[in-house]
Length: 216
View 1 (tube, rainbow, N blue to C red):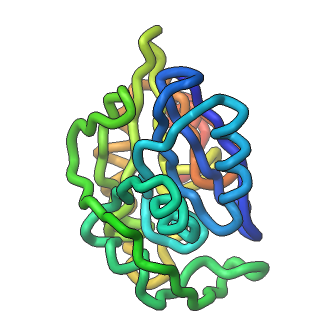
View 2 (cartoon, rainbow, N blue to C red):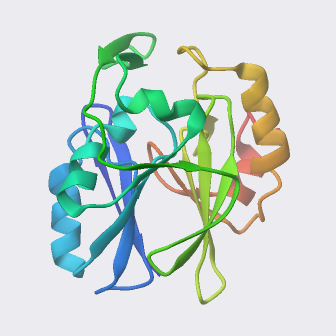
View 3 (cartoon, rainbow, N blue to C red):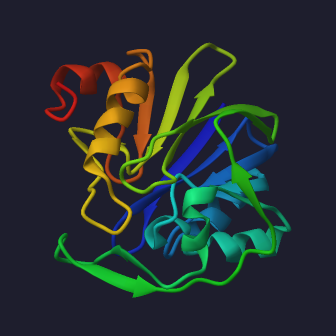
């Protein structure tokens, strides 16, 4: 499995490209503000062709270039129904600078949108497990992958970070729902699962289970 990730935009939101290997189709996960150049560079360097755009949730710093990429490559944007409106509606998104602020942004309509449901999703030769984890937003999800070698990977968006969890003080945030998602879904993942979060560096479920104060 090939995974290419990079931070983009003022909020350094991580965008990931996942493929079975070089020269194959890929899924582009969370192409946010300023992610276009990084995506184009990764596609060239690894000879990848986008098969779909996936969104862990609908905040602008994770989907700002989703419609543009989908239009350029004639692919579909996949997002949960609960966050579908955030692709285009003016909506508060995490603010620049002061973490307690928000900005209001709009984005163009993607040419095609498919609503995510819990369970397996087959795209680009990959089997992707979609786990609904409401709390940061009502439609937040985790994307789980398993490599041919047996390694486990979870793209957690803004549900889980290394040493922290997603904020719940923006519209649609729900502390009780996030706590339930962490307890029933995140903690249930195998400890050797490598976590690639929406911001910051990677970690593992085992490491977070042992040391993340929000999971103890």
